[in-house]
Image: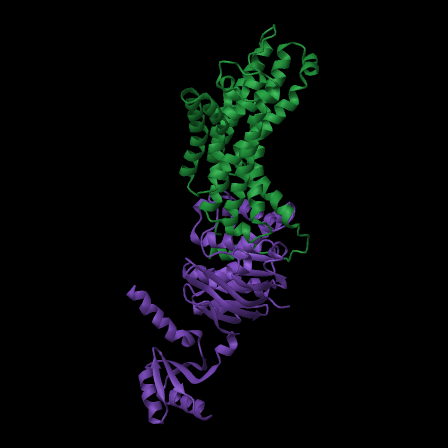
Length: 309
Length: 294
């Protein structure tokens, strides 16, 4: 089944074109949606959810037409917005159960699934308390829970790790991964952090100025490179020096040495040299290209723009 | 760490949901019930209950007073008549509307919860209608319950309840009709104003001002201007409309010295005007939710 299908989807505001003829075809999986601020990520998500009407073009999710079959479709879709969206004076239990009913679940089923879902996202005794006292981490968990409680076939997550500390980030990404791989729920996740996309997603969609820049499996973007990474416990400089004497192209990157692969004898050469120097070999691996390498140039430009404002 | 460990103990695994999905009508009804509970602060903290429950109790005081007199006194004493009841409690009804309407629709805008509703099995119109239905119901509770207590009180005052019921049963449609029209109009005004802003303070002031100022201005215009013009100003004052159509429903002629009496308009005009305001406010409410960004 096709997860997302859009045909020249366009959204114009007076003076601004947020989406510009976006045509997209995606299969179920964990899809990372990247792009700078204002690239059209949130606009795309809102059109898919029926929160915004496109100026022209059409979109289908899970085989349902977004405009014509919105009510039916949205029983099978969960949405976690980027912004705060929780009422302050009700408990997480009360709120999530209510939201499950609004998604079409009968009252009893809504109650049962609320308890299970809140437990799953890691909210325990505090789920009976008013949400006004919740930490950012707890609020993000409730936001995730209300998008998951009705067992959707697709979840749209807009910057799910927003405002979380590193530990909270790890837990959120781990949850997102589990939701997709163990529960069979497709996920579209907008993020501006490429590291996060690389960790959990299997497909990447990049948009820029409302246009599609690329849509490709992550694996194809992070192919193995012709570079070996070497890490030793001891002075890396000595090793670098000796390897260069062997005529190898060696760069130093922090504690790592990056060696250009030329022939199959390279592994032996490095191993023997390390042994000769009496060093311990910690790591010897062929490097994968990272997403950040792909985006490095545009990101740098963006930061300069940001700094000049 | 402790949280993760606990997670391992309690995590019983995720189960896919294979039950029914009840769709739009179920969602609308669930929102209606949730909103009606919210009006009276049920399922919320104590601070959310104080105002609505307090006012609901206060509005019963005149009726309970009549009931008390009926219980004590031997003779027939009818202190309060049903058609006069809203005159005593109109400011409480206005205060109730002022207190709950901004919470009912403003809260979801303030906390940005609307996108969660509109991305579910619910249309924007459904959202507005569920909220509107909840407030109309709440206003009906605040009007019909005291009237019912008063009805029983007056019946007991005659020491012949069954005889009273037999004689006065024709009051029942008048009680229900006036209560319904009052609820439709008041809820409509409250929500049409409250939905315009997420700021509670603004909408509260605006709602109360609509009731109180309209009443004061209508009274002044009736006094001061050409009577042929001034008397129609009563048709824009919710309090005067309630008084006018209530008398009409009960088939009672207004006191010639009262403002309604002096305006000397046909009673049906008050009812029609109230119905018109109720309809216009629904249209305003629906339009607001069609346009609001979520």
